[in-house]
Structure formats: C-alpha cells, structure tokens
Image (cartoon, rainbow over all chains, first blue to last red; front, side, top):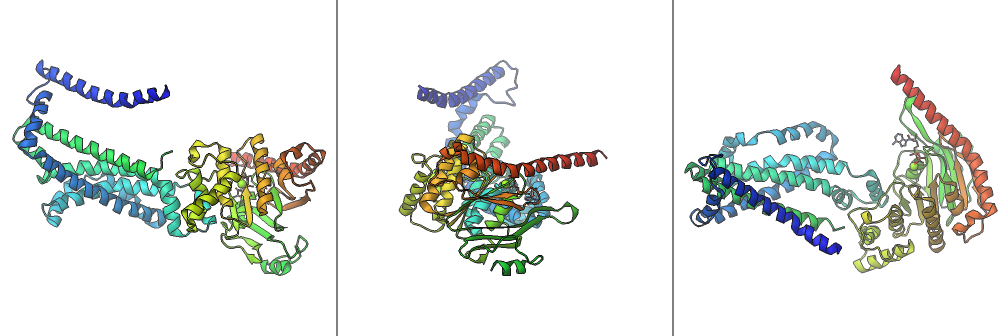
Length: 256
Length: 294
Ligand SMILES: Nc1ncnc2c1ncn2[C@@H]1O[C@H](COP(=O)(O)OP(=O)(O)OP(=O)(O)O)[C@@H](O)[C@H]1O
Ligand SMILES: [Mg+2]
C-alpha cells in the first residue's frame, strides 16, 4: 500500500509539472487570440511548436545543440577542475583566504560579459573565448562553497583522522572531501547555472556557434516563433545538464 | 624514571605519586595544560599524575569543565603542547601514538559511509585486502552487537548504535590502549548500563588497557578497577579509589551494597568539586553580567 502511494507520488509531480506547462501555453494562446496580449511581441504557442520542425530541418538546430553542449561540457568540467583546487587553497592558507575572499565574492557579482571585446582580442572569435569567459563567470560559487564546505567539516572527524595517524593527502581525500561534498555540490549547481547562462549569452552576444547565435539570427529576421522554439531547445539542454548533475551526485554519494 | 622525568619537567622535584611500578603501560606524570596567557588564562589540567597497568580499566571522573577532555586530548597526542610527561611504553607522547585508540565525546561516525565501511576504515588506511577487511570489521560489528546493520548508514541508526559503531571502528585496528571520552554521555541510563556490559565483555576478550573519561558515577564504578577522582579547575587528582568488586561483572552489580558504598564514597568527594564548579560558574556569569552592565 505504501508502495502504491510512493508510485503515485513519483508520477504525480512530473504530471503536475507537464500539466501546468500545457495550461500556461493554452492560457497564453487564448490571451493572444482575444488580443489581450499583443501577438507582434509574443508569438502563438502553437506557432512556436509548429516551427520546431522548421528549425530542426532548415536551421540545423540539433547540430547547434551539439555545439552549445560541447562548450558547456568543457566549461563545466573546467570550472570544477579549477574552482575546487582554488577553494581548497583558500581553505588551507588563511592569509590567502583573507586576501582574496572579497575579490572572489566580487567576481560573482561582476558583469563579466561586458569584457567580451578583451576576450575576443585574446582568444579570437572562437569557442575558446566562450569557454574561457564562461569558466570565469562560473568560478566564484564553486570556490566559495568549496572553502565553506571544507571549513565546515566537524573538528571531531578531523581528530578521528589524526588519531589514526592519517597523512595530509589521506585526510583530504578520505575525510575532508567526502565530508564537504554536499556543500561543494551546492556550489557546483550554482556554478553550472552561471556557465549555462554565460555560454548561451555569449554565443548570442558575439554571434558565434550554437543556440545563442541561432537565437540571434532568428531574432534579427523577426522570426519570433523560430526564436522561441530555439529557446525551448536551450531549456531542453539545461534540463539535460541538471539531470546529469543529479546522476553524478547520487553516484558519488552512497544512497542512504 | 619517574623522578628523572619530573626533574626534566622542571619546578618541584618531589613526585606527588609514589613511583609507578616498572610495568605501567601508560604513565601520566605531572601533566599540566594551560590555555591562554595572563589573567584570562585557564589552567585546565594541573600537575596530574597517575598510571595505568597493562589490561587495567581506569576511569577518570570529574565535574563538567574540569579538564577531562583536555587530558584525553593530551594522552591521545592531539594536544601536543603540554607540560610534564605522558609516557607510553617509556616514550613521551608528542603526537598520536599507534598503540592508542580514541573514542570521542562527540558523534564521530562518517555519515557518508555505511556501518561496515565505517568500521573497516582504519583497515582501509592500512591497505588490508577487501575480504580480510570485511571479515575483521564484521567481527567487531558483532562484538558491539550490530550484526545485521552492516549496510545501514549512520543517519538510520540511533545515537547509541552510532556510538557503538565508533567504538568498533576504534577497536578494529587493535589498539593496546583504549581511550574513551564520555562515550555514553548522550545516552539514556538503561542503554548506558547495557553498553557498559558490552564494554566489560569486550575488555574481557581483548584485554586492552582502558582509560575511560566520564562524569557518570555509576558508569565509573560499574566498569573500573580504579577511579581517578578529579578536582574542578584546576583539574587535579583529588583521590584514587580502588574498586574491589568481583569480576566478571555485569550491570547487575549496581544493585549490590558494595557498589552503593563506592558510589556514596566517591560522590562525597565529587560533590564538593561539583558544587564549587557550579558556584564558580555562577559567580563568573554574575561578574560578566556586571562588567557588561558597567
Ligand atoms: N582550546 C581551548 N582554548 C581555551 N580554553 C579551553 C580549550 N579547551 C578547553 N578549554 C577550557 O578548559 C577547561 C576544561 O575543558 P574540557 O573540555 O577539558 O572539560 P571537560 O572536563 O571535558 O568538560 P565536559 O565534561 O563538559 O566535557 C574549560 O574551562 C574550557 O573552557
Ligand atoms: Mg569533555
């Protein structure tokens, strides 16, 4: 009986989610039909759905999804490979932490996109520019959360390690990192969100590469249904990314 | 040896305790520890001396805040700066010692590992092969009475069960000296008595030298061969009481008249200290209140 309940609630949530999306689309359709919302600004949801086929066939949207996903994949990996060690260094060296903590926090708030001409000069109009800028954009949360997570490890766990005569690297990999992992993951989540926004945003801005550029193109052609259809693909990509993150998280953390 | 060590430690040369018999495994020799400098300094442990024989079970009892955990950390090698000597097998402790296993006052299981992997952790560090690791961990899981819970995560266990996981994890690497800092402090009296039986039983089996730090009278008398009664601030040795209750003991011993006599006797000592502790804490709070207002 409890199983049936659990089964029902497992499907209830996604069903409610999908239901609300359909309901909003339907409501929007009606608002547009009745002229309450201006249809020169917002396209009909039905037209957006119909244009999906067109942008898949004519605009090679799947290839562009691949391109965006490629840039995101590298940015997301790089953000972890760079952010976690920096966060660890800030945890290890108090002085360093005091010196740069505020700068890292400032980095999180800085509108880095505005510096895109500089990066264009440095890295050319290429995927590399997009990846580098996105990595820098996504770095702050993961650095901050890594430091916070490591500093928050309960001292008694560290004492257990010391009493077992664990070396520094054993202590790091077998106690500090696993104990801090939940907090580090919340940092990864935030960082990846920043990266995602940045990749598509910069593609749009410098008119290069994947979905961002496509959206730029379509918008310039006043192809509103196409633009929104492409945006749907961006949403799709981000949903996939966060599903992957969730998988990685449960895989790294043994199930209770 | 004791005299030489005392001389090396400086100040007064007369040892407080008679020189310990040659075979003592753990010697606490005029150990002091002060936190801070100047008027705000706290002397947590002051000139404590006692020794523990191989296979002996000694309890160290004192009111809250008297310096028990400080002493525990010094003996365990986690507090490397202290005055005096803690000697294990004739060498001075300055850092964690391989022969010493520690069970901490706070909850210390690894929440990301299941019971089996928690207990096997020290073996993993020693690169013991997986199947041997499992067998040895399993043995200690059974010893603390947790068979059937190997795959559970700590979050699924009660506080008492988690503390037993910590004890098994400490025992698995076969320490010759077991240090426990109020391992049952967070537990109710019944669980505490039953876990006490487990500890007695384990010690009967493994014969490890044990120093139990506690503020619980019943627990101390139930388990120990000797009890070191501590004073409150600074933490000193007030008295050492031999407990001549027959072994093997079970928790039933608590209802015997002899047990009651020991408890009453030690409580007599302890009450003074605990009262003083409370009065000082209250006076301190009042003084702080006054300065805050003034
Ligand atoms: N790291 C430290 N810095 C400064 N003072 C400390 C430190 N550790 C302990 N103290 C002080 O030393 C005294 C003894 O502390 P300790 O933790 O050893 O007491 P305890 O007997 O274990 O108490 P409890 O029974 O409550 O665990 C206390 O007054 C405490 O404030
Ligand atoms: Mg304590």
